[in-house]
Image (cartoon, one colour):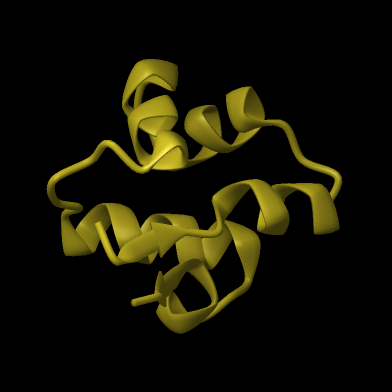
Length: 67
């Protein structure tokens, strides 16, 4: 898929674990893992909003389009 999720990069820059982010956002670690791996088919805007709030980023920092 040409859209990738830069979640690992953002987590590393903020010294945060995926477990910590999942707890703060209110999603399961399994669902966060699906996002991180790029296997997600969709993401809810409410989840995207919560992730962006916790990581203090813009959606464009998280989602990348690569041909």
